[in-house]
Length: 382
Image (tube, rainbow, N blue to C red; front, top):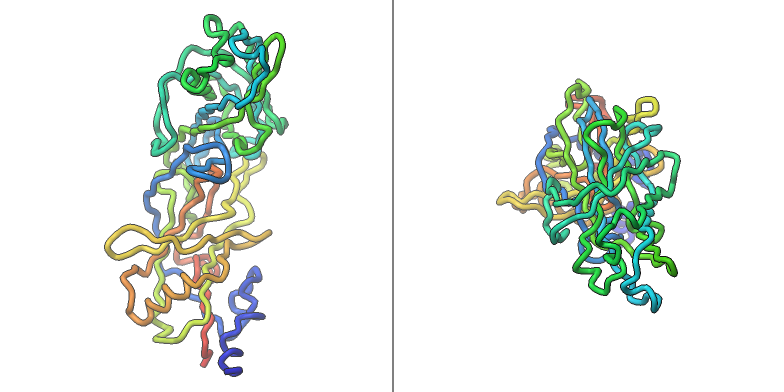
């Protein structure tokens, strides 16, 4: 029993270290034999927050030109919830101003770009559940054009009460939930600086909110339903040696195929997945954030997908999965021929917080560490 325990003990293997794939002689590295992209649904709507049903922690706003990864346009929609308790003289009072406060936590594109943002009221009912990313919501007339400055951690857009002529009690009505459908924030089609940028705002933060002011009171409204309309085009000058994957794009998922037959019917102690990630894809002040987390799925032969694990990036280096019984069982069954799952894994970008993160992968055949790889620890190294 002690001997068996020693053979299966994975401590000290070194697989958790960056670049430590082959530290242990019991570890076998299986690089992917084929890479491909595939289309997956990428929901961009949800309820402001990090937990609960359909959580969405961020909205995106902006317009960016990027020949390497494709142009992108993001339009944000923000609904809000009236607090359960308001001052006695708040109901029915005329609004003197409405302020949108948003905590900025993300930039894709020119980090020095100031973004002009048009603000409109949303018209018509909508729900974030099942809302396609290319949906266009109806809006009213232009209320205001604000300038979002990249150095501002907290972006503040103040709309004067005069912009709500004829609707000055909209925000103080007890029927606010059914009368107000949100604000639209979008960069105009012309007049924006190029190459531009797409900014991200943390809607899960309590700092992101609406502040409704009357002559007597100021009341904070928490954000509720949020949505980012996201449009992306194909790159016009993709890097010749890279597979330019980006979150939210039509082909935004990676498929990696493996051939574990060289292991025969070996008994496996542990299987990890390692995905190479470059340190940076930036060019000067033009920023392309590298993805830090992806979800991994197994693919049944009859279609569909089954969640396996998450790969996360350490301080520097590859994305790496933690020890996963799911990975180990899947690969072991590949070897034994006792599975209905394909020998292909699918990696998907996280949908919350929404981003335009990139995963630049070297096209096969590449260097020894260029491809996603399975790191297999054997029970019996011989």
